[in-house]
Length: 471
Image (cartoon, rainbow, N blue to C red; front, side, top):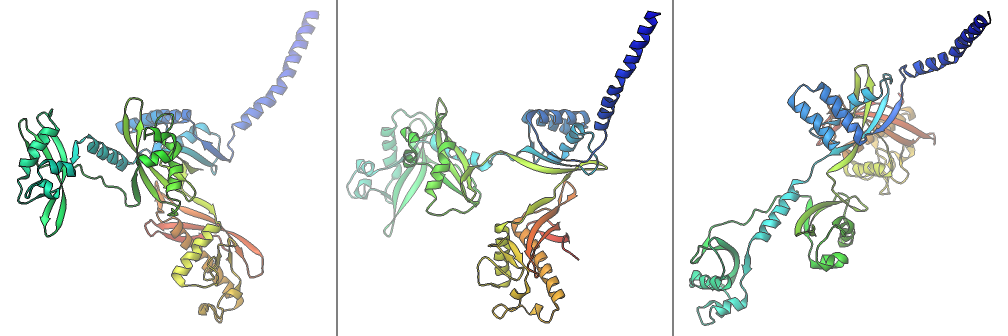
């Protein structure tokens, strides 16, 4: 009887102890329910492996398989392997409980590639360095005879001389150990008559018994982008940097990246570089066994010189729709002083001066100084700056016109700020959400978010206003 009572008490305790667990299970079930959220995600190396694995599972072609493996191996995206094609599957896998309307801001590594022209520059310099070259000196001409009709008389050749009869013995003496097919790029002076002396560049080669001029062209100078200046460091440059001047090169303990930004800042400070200026720097580096030529591109951002990076960080916004995650190329920004000034400069160029000050205009109403649009009517249609389109309008209509002009000003800003804008990205329309501030006729501040759509891709893009101003 006692055992039965004990058993009943145990069962009662067991059932009672289950009730708290039911609350836990209910809570866990609740976590599985969909919910809307805005999240920020920065992909780590392991995430690229996950993405590559997910892509392999759905790959339907050899190229898709290759791309998936590339993501796993190099842990980045590129213009050939678009992030927008793969990040949606990652978000679906990692955030299965998010609901339609959720937004993810994803930061990832983007491989924009190396600069091919830099490789061409290095190859060109290496080819030149590998060539045997020699420029005749006054002493060389003198050694060939100084009498009238001989090279040493005026330290040059002329049309009356048999140049080969002079250069053949000269090179035989200068290069006594030359073997067949040995070549020299030679530079000498040639009197063309009429007081004109030209510099002649030729290739001469030894055929095993004699020297003779051969038809051969110099390595072709590589094509360099028009907006890039090429500069090759000289001994004085290395000396100006301190330690690199000891051997006129950089090394593992004294990398170029440590010195070049400072060197460029000093070199170009007098010429006052502008943001966007680019310089390709050719320099020498000791790699532990030999000294090699290298090239790197630096660009000026308005403050410092920054080295071109083949891999950069990029961000993209994704929205969860009824059809899954999709890339949202919408660009969102709040106008700052420089943006308002862009409109001022645009207005002056397009409509002439409408203000006494270089940082304001009243066609659109933009003010770089105050970082807003001044929409007060007292500044329109003044004696100094007439705007006849405002004449005769009611206050209501005049205010409406200032709003319309503000809208046009923001559209003008977009054309200047985003000259390479595209109408679509991966088949999705591109919108711009612009936060602006206005000083209104009633002397209060107005804040608006204007929405535009890029309806024509650059160059010379077009932007269409969608919404944002009061009706």
